[in-house]
Length: 69
Image (tube, rainbow, N blue to C red):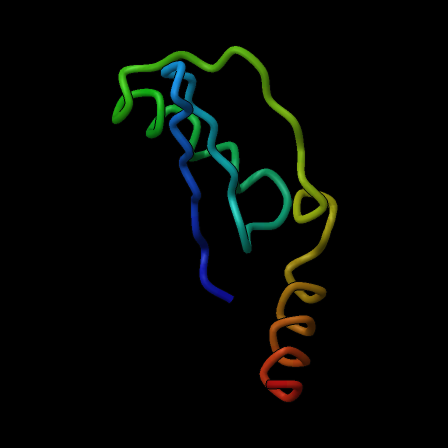
């Protein structure tokens, strides 16, 4: 599965980002990079379901999706 980061900029200038396809704490590596690129500071942070999943679970899900397509 591909690692992706979705960045959303609201009409009020607020910025949110969500990682996809990363398990465990790998997603946390992107916080400093995003802060630097966007000239922003993290105010709040939440873990997604992918944070709690293992790499094997993600690969299995990706394989199942390919077969269902």
